[in-house]
Length: 114
Image (cartoon, rainbow, N blue to C red):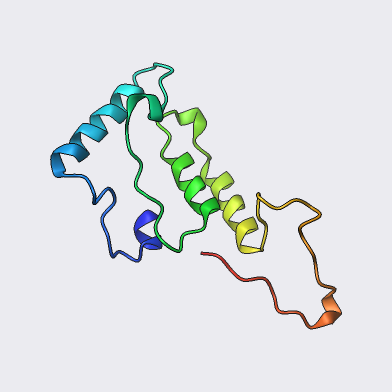
């Protein structure tokens, strides 16, 4: 998903050397060893959010990268989230922020996010 949203123009973790990428993966693996250590505490790095990638989509990607199997969304949950996002839902909007145009108003449909 990261490669698609970055249009294949960059490599994940391109700011790291090959040795640093291996060290990063070793830190991720160490954190998965059953400890309660978080990614921030152990110092592993996620790929940066591609420019033009909505924050909500990036948050979904980082949830999918969780080393804790229970912490990752299922494929069904990810699919449902993306469907809602594509339909204009934003988890950061309150109900009061959403203004739905009447069907007969001729308003343009919501912008689609990929």
